[in-house]
Length: 275
Ligand code: ACM
Image (cartoon, rainbow, N blue to C red):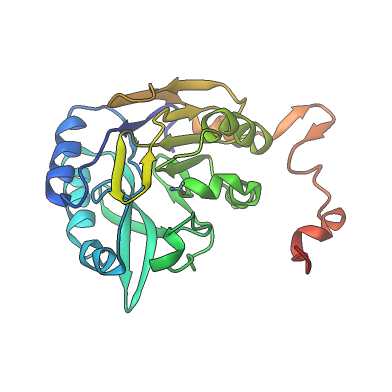
């Protein structure tokens, strides 16, 4: 593993349905970056607001054989960065809100979003991969997608599985995430890279979605190392040492993982029967 590495995100406003244009735009924007890990938004090449399951079907891709994964893999092979990027995945007759991890040697793995947000529930299936961490040449990378952040169990599961860095492709519309990620990082002592998008989609009568930007990189101490503006395209990179995420000690008496008492958290494994 490298000692220090550069992790970054690219925030922008994709054009709905224009997959090849969006992929081209992103790869052009990031072609000179020195980031060794680059995180792109959820559904970065398709846009977000699908108005029918037919649209989902038309824009979804097999992983890793689909156009987007192959284009990113080629870029990574030529230029070197690991990439985490969100895309609609087709597998058999199911559709998932997924994110792929790609390295210079090719496709590494896929994560399928566990907690679907709002109307994603209409056409997408809840993810079946569980929270996954990959041990790569640049550190241990875990992945969650957008609304997953709202469930503290997601980042906890990734941190307990050994993640140094949580890559977080997003299409945030609620305002809470950017100010909450420092707490998620602090309580788990991990880095995070949230890649959000900007712009507005008005593809559904009476339903305007405004995406809040503010992509950010956060340290295991809860420090915001980089944060993008609300409504501008941005490529931002921070130098981090993934090993900082391996020391869970707070002081000589407290270790954030060793001090956990799972036997006291029984309620976490039970679903309340009454709402
Ligand atoms: C979201 O999960 N895209 C808000």
